[in-house]
Image 1 (cartoon, rainbow, N blue to C red):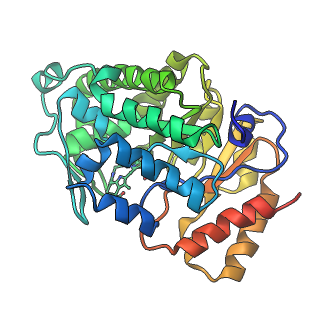
Image 2 (cartoon, helix red, strand yellow; image 1 turned 180 degrees about the vertical axis):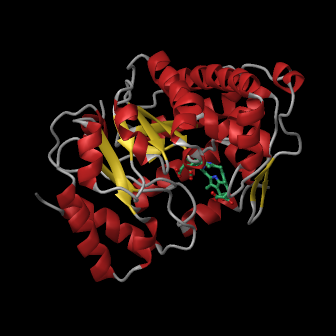
Length: 340
Ligand code: CP3
């Protein structure tokens, strides 16, 4: 049994004695201890594929920052690779796909991934579970089908994702065929993660914000909803659609348990749109560049605006690599020390 159930209870809407806190991109980026382990692998992809190293950095933030959950160290782009579209991670630039998806035959050539195709993640999960020894919950994750499509069509990061959006506008049927294949692969993958013992699953729709409202519903939310339904409530689920706060009401109508918020929406507006669904977020990661007094003051203000119940404290997006570890820890400690 889990010794610290705060995250799970909050996600399920059960009463908690204090607000749970974890941070998106807590595994990696700000910890010097992470960089030391990363240096043992040849490159990022070898690192992700090494279950011992991946499990080690998964647990680091629990020991070092004192967060209330671990998130498995992996990447959303393992799915395209398992479907037959490999990626590279270029130092200081980000992901790059040598081949991209353009035609029907490109989509036909992709396989629907099975959990066994991602055996290295399954092993990293089992090892992380074992070494965490039920101290805190382990979060599993996947990219939202739209965000995965965006990388597979665009070939890498982009401000506008205009190639990916061109694909949606000019080849909507192909886009849906691709989204369907990604969705099936993601369901297989996440079911495998649940079998390995993850306690909660988060879907990251990092690029939802490039879509118009109607396109978000058509090309993104319906596939996330399908994934949530396929997981059948076996563990609580979180949908994080960055920059799509117009959609909070519609997201709350899916069967997800928690809605992740970026920093562009107030707690009040989010609560009005979400009913009593659990909310997660939403401090601006740049707040952690501020001095200590400002960090504490703003974190207190945020905690007061959200309520103690039905709330998981987090940032509105991932930590930035140049944030100081001591300020990140101050944020975590401030949340843990706050009483309503
Ligand atoms: O949250 C965690 O700490 C768990 C690990 C995790 C990583 N990637 C490790 C990683 C998670 C949850 C992700 C998800 C991910 N990956 C997303 C969705 C979340 C978000 O931030 O919006 C996206 C869009 C990606 C794709 C990706 N992976 C990019 C654009 C990059 C390069 C730039 C960067 O650092 O984000 C990566 C590489 C990556 N993934 C790193 C880490 C720790 C940095 C690699 C390194 O150590 O050099």
